Length: 469
Image (cartoon, rainbow, N blue to C red; front, side, top):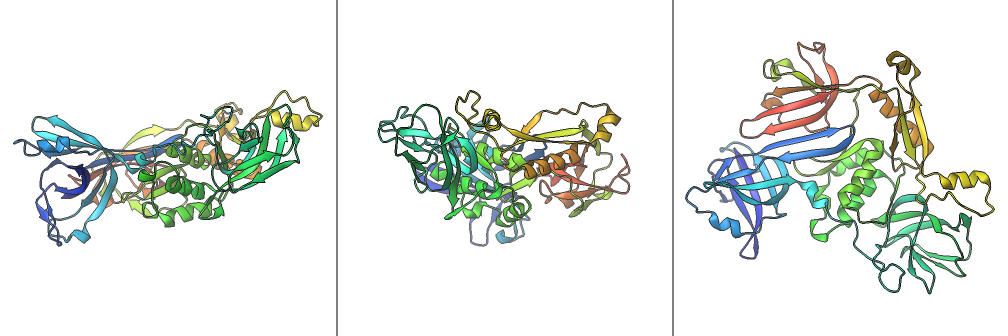
């Protein structure tokens, strides 16, 4: 059976409604209303070239006699919902949480049924990173105060006061500014105040665009510049205060492990309206990772990668007979090109006395590295000039390592297998390393891959899984 604990604002008061697919009373004498007609079905997936996705079916609620018509007048939008699976004979504490999300709204499936539309918890992050405007006497008072994440090269600070010659390079407390320039030439007579994200020229600015190299935000009092640290900063400190994540919403152990495995410094400069989720995805995609909530709703960063070892085995006896099939095979690529160290203000018409090599650098938006497998190129008769993958990485060594990592994945055709699984694998997590066995498709000895999609039907206790090897 499935228990649902659903938040709602009724008559102006925030309450929790306890619903279930079968009659159940918790040990604390909390009765669950057995009004759920159709329980929970959740589909989630990751892929190498797009953001993770998660969809949950509607919760359908019996209402044949109209007893719950008044629920249509309650406020369900953006309210929390949690689902737990267990046996009617169990104590409530023994139930396992299988979903944590947000309600889109209530509706009617038919005259006899209400429905609650659900989305995953990441929907709470679809709010702007900042809405703080320059204001005052600025040339453009409606411009946003920029947000500087990590380290960025050649950014354009926004003028905040044309009289005092003040510019904003960040919002709130920042780490440092390495150099301020106009028309690409360093300026010395500038007062920088990192704690406010401001810089002031002590002499005339002169012609040309003002740019600088700077290090941005602090998290818990310390400068941060890795993907995991910046994602945690964004989801807990930015966006609408009411929908921000707290420490309880983070899988601290997994995020720490991701940080240890991916310590590359990154940088992202936000001058326009950008949602928290989009900013997080930009950072994570730099190393092929995606934001994924666990079944308990805790945020994780999952990298699309092909593991060397598995943490679980999926045997033929744990698959429905004749259900396994191939759903995708990737195209082979002989090379990968990664863009790194973005120039946030390309300047291709500098008239100053800079060396030509410097002018060339200032004109380029990206530096790039390419990984090539000549053998694959010859075997498959492929072009060696790929489309560039833009990242937030800063260093050549990290760009090259990421290009090499991605090339190892794409230079071999990868196969995704789909099959229906028994309840034994209902608790497998998205992104988990598994070893798949089958009497078809050369899987008799098993192959290690990544669980890239799972659909769990908590009414039937069946799941449909996809594994990429």
